[in-house]
Image (cartoon, rainbow, N blue to C red; front, side):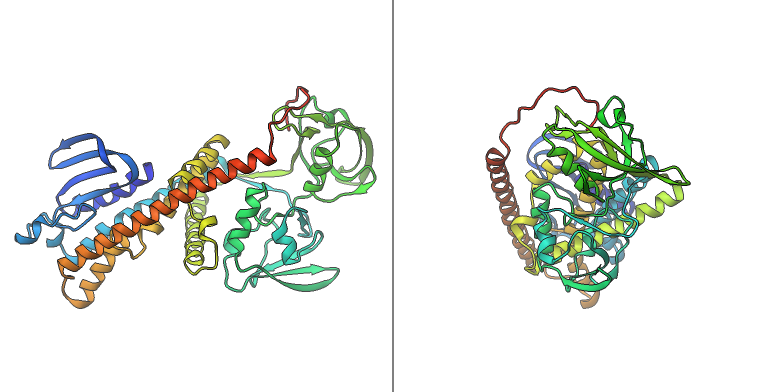
Amino acid sequence: MILVFVHELGHFWAARAFGMRVDRFSIGFPPNILKKRFGETEYVLGLTPLGGYVKIAGMIDESMDTDFKDTAPQPDEFRSKPLWQRMIVISAGVIMNMVLAGVIFFVLTWSFGDSRVAHTEDGSVFVMDSSVAALDIGIQTGDRLLAIGGHEYDPGGDLIPLSALLVDDLTFEVEREGQRITLDGPGNIMTRVQELQAGGLFGLGIYTWPSALGSVAPDMPAEAAGLQVGDQITAINGSSIRYWPELTDHIRNSGGEPLELTWVRDDGQISVEHQAAVTPVMNTVSCDYVLGIGLGQTLVEFGPLNSARIGVSDVWNNTRTIAASLWRIVAGKESVRENLGGPVMVANVIGQAASSGPRPFWHIVAVLSITLAIVNILPIPVLDGGHLVFLFYELFARKEPPIKVRMFLQQAGMVLLLVLMAFLITNDVIRAFSSRGDADVVEAPKTCEVVETEAG
């Protein structure tokens, strides 16, 4: 509800700044659990956490109150203020959500920096066997990804950004055995990505992570075998490997049997090849076999100015991605059921992010803040975008729309939102039960050999 509070606070501050009377500031909807009046404003906390509203005197809003229509406009009412002031008041909630997102991205970048995962020097990719989407496209392990949707691909990224996939004519250009090949992407790329994420894969299941070690945990098999940070594992049991997913797959499927590792160590002058037999141990949390090694990452720190620049860039990139995603859903290019969620899904996403630490949690809060802003600016009566439509009508027609018309459209918009919310909640429940059913079948409760480990 913090995002709703910030949104409504924007309307409240703007209205008060222009001398408008605010009769009610409500977070949540009835039944009310708290109600207190300070000055001319009544502050309300509702039990139904589906939004909020600021009731500004002389304005037709969610309260559908039109008692003022038979009285002359008062100086402290919304309807008596200049058009530009009313536009600012209506836009202030969306602006506050965008500002909040920018501040969060700024603080995260300045506080945590940017952890960049190592990537193959030539930009070649590894495709997971379970990545049906990538395999359907025709991308193969060893391909060098050159462009997505006509835009040059930066091999420094560890994942393909969703924003690069949201184009009408999605193509992938790769270099394979010296030849440049163009591959057609699926029309429902968002839905395909969602399916892969449900299976535990990121993006399209395409990775550029090399089999170089970024960390070696103490008192674990890898350290005991002499492996060090920076070593590049080149073979397991005689089978050549280049990519991190290949390495971890071999280890997980080892069954605890010894693995003959071959690795290369570069001391700055010469590269020396090493070999050793290493026996994986069981991680009692994940029930996976592990060696105690981690993927290579580099932490890049930023000062306040660069952090602010990155914060603005993150807001812009996320806004483009979310807006393009919504447009693809509305245009029928993506599955509504697979890509839209309601409060149950949002709570689940926030819970998962919170369990992963402060950075993932606040990142998802920033993304949700942008999403709230975009949804509110849609030209639907009851939403901020609907109010702006009325004001733009007034701007060009030189008169306000009739109150009866506004009331009818407000009521229609409210019905539409209630129907949409009911659909989203139902969709959340169906998705939750489907996921639970799948988990019962596929992921039976695990029991694994108890071996004390310090790292995965």
